[in-house]
Length: 208
Ligand SMILES: C[S@@+](CC[C@H](N)C(=O)[O-])C[C@H]1O[C@@H](n2cnc3c(N)ncnc32)[C@H](O)[C@@H]1O
Image (tube, rainbow, N blue to C red):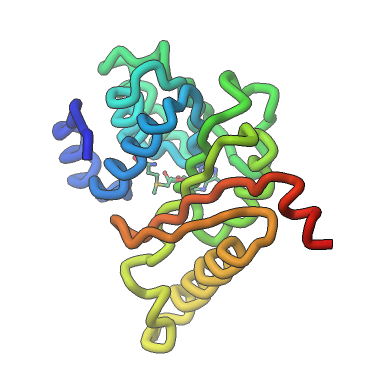
């Protein structure tokens, strides 16, 4: 685990305001993968107040990040933090719905990594919208696929809305883990991470 720059103040601030941010264990797993692969570009879906983008930009040398956030006040806060930590040269923040955001406004495509950390019910739609912007040798990270252990214990969830959400997360997890065009590995790290890579095109075609 190689977190050299730990933005403790920002983490504390986000947690105090009950803003959902990526767990440290998952974040450090991701930073390690980005450093190992010498990633230079990343698209994040779900900036919140900029914590994970700032952690990645501070711990992966030269990484350029596009990050999309739906909520205007969180976006404004993320902009302030990116300025305060002097990372505007590495992080481009975008205000909008990632399901419809104009692709031509993104600064750093194509990407070495796509990181999906927004509305959990929409994971598959985010994935399908942005996978073509990932370089052939790049990878995708999706967080929260355990959803606090609930994904493996759906029958015991009493709240109907929560149960419906958890079913959607499980559906995405099953879909991607069995998709013939992708190699996906589940890691029980943080809140459950899946790392996805495109299979070589000929491997998929060989099956026919
Ligand atoms: C879990 S938080 C992101 C945390 C952040 N990645 C971190 O670890 O610091 C998810 C964020 O996704 C945003 N979001 C939800 N739906 C979205 C959408 N359709 N497009 C862009 N952002 C969205 C939410 O407003 C929320 O701030």
